Length: 107
Image (cartoon, rainbow, N blue to C red; front, side, top):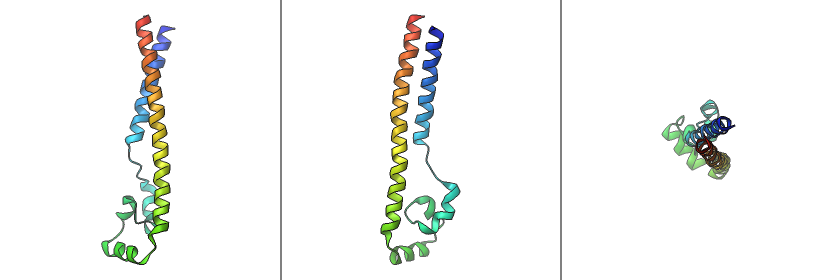
């Protein structure tokens, strides 16, 4: 029983670490960035495929509101997902530490 409690706590701590790493890892969407680059001039992954003159022309000649709207929504979805991962990692770390500590004290 004590070993199961200890290793369950260690498992939760490891899951918390994995979720924390997932939060800070950048989401680059490199597979789609080139294909979507002509429709976007806000995300740096799209901008790397643009030439300065091409970007200047797009900023002067196109309405930026639809592009900004799409990017803000995409960023909010990513942020929401990452915030949920932070919440889950905090819960997993707290419960895991409590379980492992309880097991060590009981041993």
